[in-house]
Length: 312
Image (cartoon, rainbow, N blue to C red):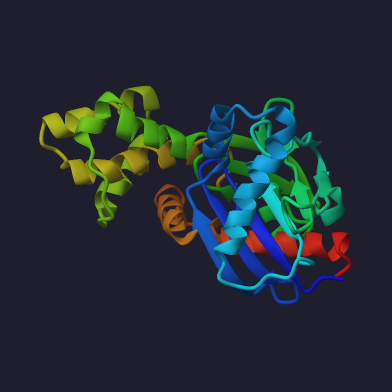
């Protein structure tokens, strides 16, 4: 029986580690860094180390992160890690679980890795889910952490690769991936549009609204070029264009939802959540949306896994 866990969300571009009380999901300590799986994998390739030492290489990253928590963590505390750690570029590849998937802790594909001299804590590695033409890793654990009932609803996980997940009768029955965040980054920083955009945290709600409407009602390959002409014709400043492009992509993503009257759960952080909630109000003001904090969902999911795999 364990009273605490190390909860790790290891994404493609980010890393977050928390020490958590299992009984109430309270976070006791937290560490974040930019050592996402993609960066670690590239560093691993450059090291020239043999394949049989890859897991050791990744464990050293984890060991360093635990040491930065500023908290004395007992060796008996296990680490539960979800996200890209179980991908082909991760510490050890696990096959995807297929759908339909019952949203219960024991339904996910996991693997226990015993503690050793390279890492003092036992590891529970959590894999992802696949359809015939789509995959995800990490969102399934957050979904596990949400309160699941027998209603049919759409769970949306905004991010670099946004996921639209259909849940019915307590099962994950389908999902789609939208490269919204990644396309935004490419267009804003590496395309011809980059000269017309300036990253900022301003509040340009009217401009964002215009972008949402334009994205939802036009061909994205055409309307995206308007970011450039907005600057050429002095319609929007580079700061305003930043939010116009954000609105374009989010509006285009949400326009793919075939029924905006269905129950929708938005699982994300505060910043992205605000943008998506605003976009929904623009496109379908009558819709009711349940907003769930993604960090809370992930931690709850890990605590549920601890309950069955470590006999809490």
